[in-house]
Amino acid sequence: QVHLVESGGGLVQAGGSLRLSCAASGLTFSRYTMAWFRQAPGKEREFVAALAWSAGANTDYADSVKGRFTISKVYAKNTVYLQMTSLKPEDTAVYYCATRSSGEIRVLDHEYENWGQGTQVTVSS
Image 1 (cartoon, one colour):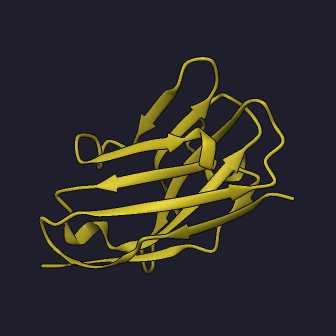
Image 2: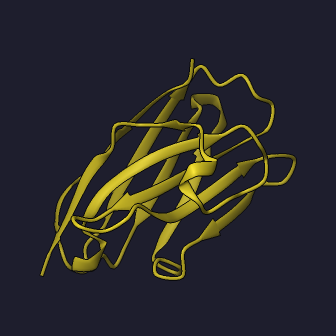
Image 3: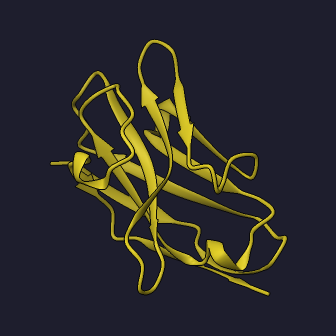
């Protein structure tokens, strides 16, 4: 059973930075994708970034975070990070880590099988 634990959320001023972590356990697939989604109050959950575990690391980002957020991984720790810089108030949301058992990145949340509990990120203006 896959278990995902996010950490690193908090309150930060606009222009600041945060780094989210997602520690995964129970992953048995040789190829899989780990992604970050977020959900703001009153809005649907949206794709933020993803990284595919395959022979070559592939990444994808939502247009709204390109150039500001970076997704990365540490293989040995089975952990994925989301480095967030130049944060804006509109980045405020609960951020979720998710995995899918495929090396192909997808941006729709229903294509991900496992989810963490979420971590709150609040950006003040």
